[in-house]
Length: 294
Image (cartoon, rainbow, N blue to C red):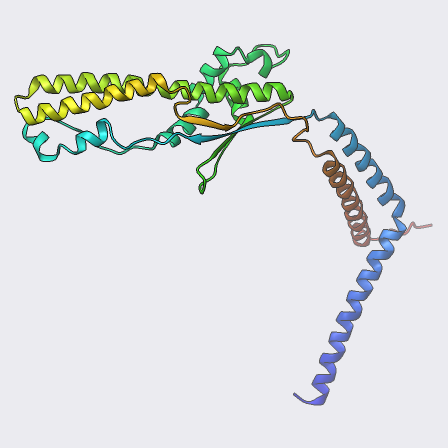
C-alpha cells in the first residue's frame, strides 16, 4: 500500500469519526431544543406510575417448610418382587413398574385441578377468591386462580419443600398453607389405605388359587406387611409431609415493589420522549419544504 492510499484511508476514517461526533452533537442539540417535551413526558409517566403503584393492593406471602416423610421400600411391590420364578410357577401374576415416588406424587396431586376443586369446595373459598363477581365463576376458573397463588419449591440438595400462598390477607395466606398441608396428608393417607386394602384382597385371592406352601407363606408375609402399612396410616398424622417450619401471618408485604414501579415508569417516559424527538426530527428531514408561489 503506497502513501497516497494510506492518506486516503486516513482521510476517510477521520471523516467517519467527524460524522459520528457531528451526529452525537446533533442528537444533543435536538434533545436540548426539546428539553421541555422530555421534561413533560417524564413528569407525566412519573405521576402515572405513582398512581398505578398506589392502586395495586398489598400482597402477602405465607410459606411453610416441610420435609418428606421417609418411606421403606418394602410392602407389596418390594415383597412380590422377591417371589421371582417361584411365583411364576404357581401362576401368580405379580405385575411390575416402579412408578413415581410418593413425594413427587404428593406435589403433583397438590397442584392438580381435582385436588384443588375439592379443596375450594370443602373450605368454601369461592366468595374469597371472587369478591362481588356476577355471574359466579366456574370451579375451573377458581382452580386456575388458586394455582397462580400457590408456589411449591423443592430443594434438590436438602429435599426440603416450601409451600407458599400469596394473598391480599396475611391471615388467609397462612390459613390456606396450613390447610393445604393437612389436606394433602389426608389425601395421601386415604390413597395408601385404599391401596393396602386392595392389596390384601388381591393376596387373599392368590392364596386361594395356589396349593404351594412356599408361595402361601410368602403371600401371608405380604399380607402382614400391608397390615402394618394400614396401621401406620392410621397412627401417623403428618403422613407424607412433616412440618418443619409452620406458616405464619407475615407482617411485611411481598409485593408490589412500588419504588421499582415508579423508577421504571419514569425511566420509560424519559426514553420515549427522546425517541419521539429523534423520530420527529428524522421525519421532518425527509419531508420536502414546499414553497408557496406568489
